Length: 179
Length: 174
Image (tube, rainbow over all chains, first blue to last red; front, side, top):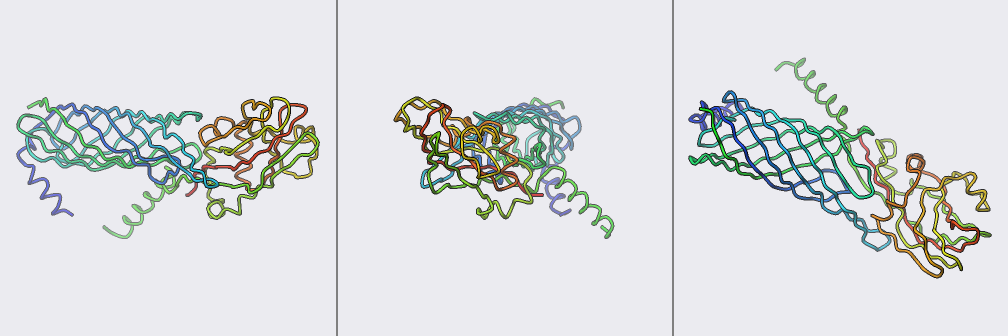
């Protein structure tokens, strides 16, 4: 494991010294985990990231998501239910190669968000969510980066359970840079 | 990493999993009512619901964290001569004989829009959610697993036939 981490750090050594500010937009898939009342949907959002030191960063984001219809066969009749929409905004911390500059950047992130799920005929589910995951970004000399992120989101609910989502995102960032 | 550190890490992970309800899942069960519920003001019919007959429910009953939503789906027919709303009442006894007794002892948990004489209403999952009333009462009933539902009309004279099923969504786990 240490060798893998070392390899990643060496691979991205030229960008280590870069402090950075970046802004970006992303989109992807929203995949409910162990939720039979919601289907897979889409996810779009924007974010801004600040890296005051090369290995650590903080980001703020806003996401707008959908869930797909869920279906259930009852007495030979297929019933469906609308998945609804989610808005989520929050902050996250990043560790790894989080600075700017061209080259590959691999990092891990963890964050907290305000999660609001709206569905017809239901009370809105408004809770605090938590998420973790890995991310990878390839930044090109033109200061544009292409990014791939995988996120596991856990939203504890009132009854003692939780809603869990797997989210796969691809995005593009513009690196303004600090130095 | 020594044994103590490993044990502490495992304990913290377990505490996190339990605190955040991570080891839970949300699943949907269907209670299919084989016979129609055909009721008039003089002759009520009921269905004794036993969710324990559903394997998924039986497996998870002790682990239920929340009853998230309940829908009654199917068809309600008005065979009477006046417009009527179909109603489903919840009780814990099957000895109620008159609408007055049901209204006195039971709790109304479902009411349909008004159906014209000779008309029918198809209720899908989405609509079935919106016609539910007294949700906390039916939540409790679902957690108990056994209850009785009566079919009624909301007028003095009625003849309603309900070909309905119940969809319940639960969150269960540790």
